[in-house]
Image 1 (cartoon, rainbow, N blue to C red):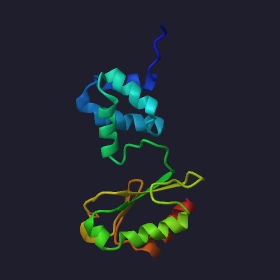
Image 2 (image 1 turned 180 degrees about the vertical axis):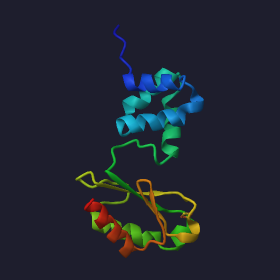
Image 3 (image 1 turned 90 degrees about the horizontal axis):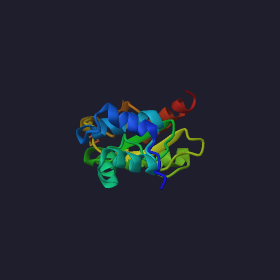
Image 4 (image 1 turned 30 degrees about the horizontal axis):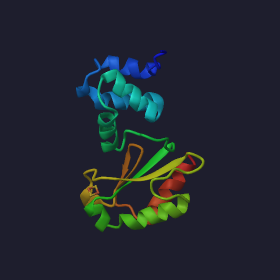
Length: 156
Ligand code: FES
């Protein structure tokens, strides 16, 4: 019987960290950097290669919003949904961006330019509502500022 081949990038990256569970997060980060996002096959191959269950891989991957498990846009917009930012008006920002980008939160625009998501507290609670565009943090946002910002990104 022919053995299904494991993805060679998966094997290479997990070997770099000694296939150790202690380094699972680093392995996943490197895989996302290399592959863009984690497909089901990558998760299965990694679990097999590290001799752990796919669920273990998924539970780490889904805990951290920066570990992508689906294709995302060039710019990933993340609006903080935690209490301070919620009270400061994050919902209006989400609604305004959904309208501007013509997508729902959790979706990606057809041109693959933007993905809109929520995230948990990023430690900017006294300057909320806070949002991220990829690694850039923006604070004291409102719907008008958020739309202006996204229009700037469109022209980058
Ligand atoms: S609650 Fe939004 S940054 Fe802390």
